[in-house]
Length: 384
Image (cartoon, rainbow, N blue to C red; front, side, top):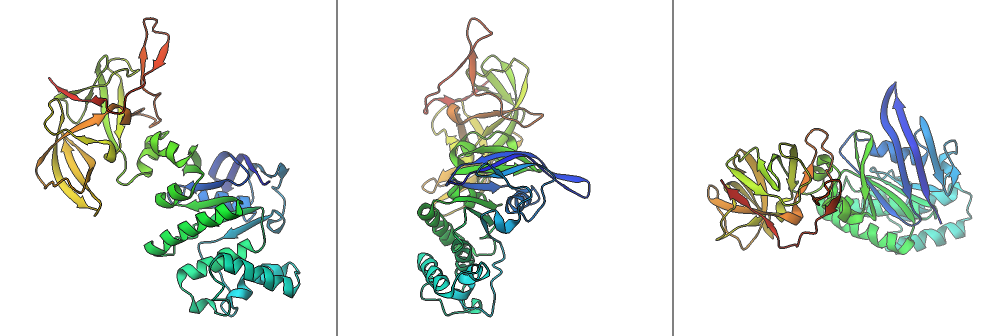
């Protein structure tokens, strides 16, 4: 049983604070992914967990034991880095076994454990090769093997796949997930790649500017982003964000298309209030043969093989729409659009934070009740 608890962790470099009071709990056997743009503090945070960076303020506990001042070698953590850092003069077997040699483990036991780990990682036929004779994916597996052979309490991965090509990254993602299911070890994985984050994580931690933006399962974070930053960081193409205001009870107007008003039942905002409306490209529907739709005009189309993305002008805003490959569209043509109510998101225009879910006021206006919207219910634009 290995758990981690981060309480108010701060990091200061040369009087500049780069981590701002990080609070995070990691359960036994959980695979947690720290994701965010370059410079957000994710690598600094994982290095603090490993003991490679000092903690300026706050507490780090592993299994309820405060480890702020514990040496890296005594924390029970093993780290896999972006750069493989293999010894070029050593064979695969010797590279994997090297941590055991440093720990004073006997040669016979070192060989046994190194060979067992190599077999787990599909390296058993490469034991006598040196790093220069291996592919990038094989080198990364050797680096992982060197961490596994120590039988650590916690695995730490600092962008281990970023040096691999796209095909190898897919293969290694699958291998890492399989390995985690087999070992069931507590793991923390750092990446800037949203696909890696979504596919690997049990728990997703989105970071921005040295702060935690949102914590949840990949599905929760994707479907209910806590801010416009999260909404646009996860997803390709990112969520469409459109400025709007409430024109009447249950009705909104997009700034980009003032000639249309959108029926938005149960929106818990007063008339005149401004907000940011969000909708993901794959949730927008083409409104063939139906009236009261938003008028889109296609600027360009990106072909993706299994689907394509149409970038449409809706008034003065550009909106991305994911279309099935069967749908044939051309640049410059009209595309009538509908927004399903269940797919709409609302954010505060100033802070970018998510507003409460759609609600409606009862006769007693002090009470708010959530509205359950059927998946096939639509929010249509009503022409004035």
